[in-house]
Image 1 (tube, rainbow, N blue to C red):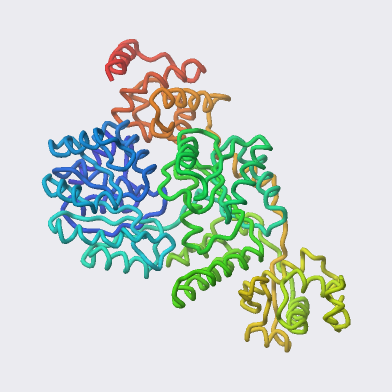
Image 2: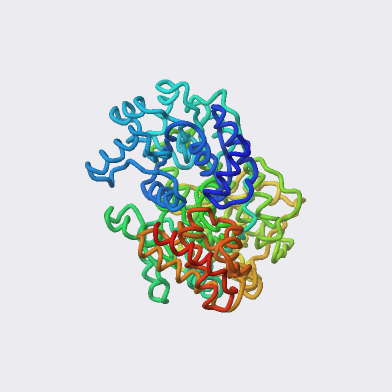
Amino acid sequence: MASSARQILERVFGYSSFRGQQEAVIEHAVSGGDSLVLMPTGGGKSLCYQIPALMRSGTAVVVSPLIALMRDQVDALLQAGVRAAYLNSTLSYGEVLDVENRLRTGRIDLLYVAPERLLGDRTLALLGAIDTALFAIDEAHCVSQWGHDFRPEYLELSVLRERFPAVPRMALTATADETTRREIAARLGLTGARWFVSGFDRPNIQYRVAPKAGPRDQLARIIDTEHRGDAGIVYCLSRRSVDETAEWLRGRGVDALAYHAGMNARDREAHQDRFVRGEGVVMVATIAFGMGIDKPDVRFVAHLNLPKSLEAYYQETGRAGRDGLPATAWMAYGLQDVIMLRQMVDGSEAAAERKRLEIRKLDAMLGYCELTTCRRQALLAYFGETLAEPCGNCDNCLDPPESWDATEAARKALSCVYRTGQRFGAGYVVDVLRGKGDERMGRFGHDRLPIFGAGAELDARQWRSVIRQLVARGLLTVDIDGYGSLSLTPAARSVVRGGVTVELRRDALPSPARRKKQAAKAVGAGPPGLFDALRARRRELAQEQGVPPYVIFHDATLAAMAKIRPRTLDEMSELSGVGARKLERYGEIFLRVLREHGAAGAPDNTVVEDSEESTAAS
């Protein structure tokens, strides 16, 4: 069994070895066992069900929540010579009948279907009449009502156990803590399933967090110095911010598109298609965008607002660098983000228990932002994983933040919040501390308080940093009153009374030179211009076929091509990501690009002729 799986891995998908627990998951599925699979985004989850689909009798059914993901994965499988199809609302009635006919006659190895379509009587009856190899439930965290991406229709997927008890089932996700895992198993009837929990670490992603100081300008500096011409995703909290940021980036020469639920479906689909199938497009979006995006060459993900939870942050940043090449996860945040998210939680119709959970998740997110230690260690610890040593690839490792004895400043800030009645926001408190009186302050008499002007030694930016960190430490809380009023928590008493030392991080701008050097690792090796020439040829082929460029070859494969510079088809077949079908179809085409750039020797004439004949035949 293992030998057969490895043969398929190499022949069909072009990889020489499995990663992590992939092989164990495949063996378990092929033998008919149920499983719950947790692997990080880009960790190779799809192979865990695609290879068993080619080893077991019948058709494997993959439950996927998004149409774009189905289309992209089917395109990639067809390129590799796998008989794959999907059933969704984009198909005409005639196309649906064609897929159903191919299913009945055993001519489909992998069928992708949305949960709503799967649960329809017609589809269930069809699946009951064919030989079904296995069910793979992708994005399985959608079944959890306590998770960050709940989909009600996923709750009904327990019907698969009842209707098809002999068919193995596999639930897969990249983001699920222990509680969510148990809920997935219970709701999908996988109580006896074997769990395969891989590490959550994505070492190629560089995590960075910065206090807001003109976030669009901060983002522009990162794009200009590190990611000009790269594909990226920029997340914003509101639709208006999405539209304005996309327009602002376009004005700076960035190929930026907007995506949010307020757009009509046709425009959203067109923008997503341009992003997935293009190169160097930046998508500016609300969190409505991105789940299931299978684009491997996203070089950066930027958050211009604080995500709601570390689970959401991990999943969203995980859309960067799926090809394993270096990528950046950058976030700018401020106290106003906390206020807005707290107000959104309070204004929702969720039950009180749910609201308390969301506030705890938001507090954990805020605590992550204010870390002075390794961010990757903290992020992995949240998911129950230990990283023994600091990662060396986050902002706190690359540019260790300074800390300072902020005990006196903390006492002044807490005292100011208390003496002004615990009913004003951070901006007002900072003005009192710095002695900036106005008519309203005079009306309240706050310009006559002993604390008025007592904090002139720090500027407004520094005081905002102090207050932000005191909120993160749980010494101040932001009230949900529409104004973001600050109030003291019980923990603040020991600081105000003295005897407790408060160490805070000193906000500093990152070093552009170091960031640029780190980002440069993503550029393909080899002679100047070769990597770009390979990408250009790939782009032409993709446009001719109407598929995303990465389904032909990933950037990582082209980078290896540019570095190793194979001279023959045999040498090219050794590259990771070059399977038998792709070698037959594209091998000579890319060898020709290598020869044109003086990067490959002239191959044997017989090999050239044979490969040209087979390419033409395909």
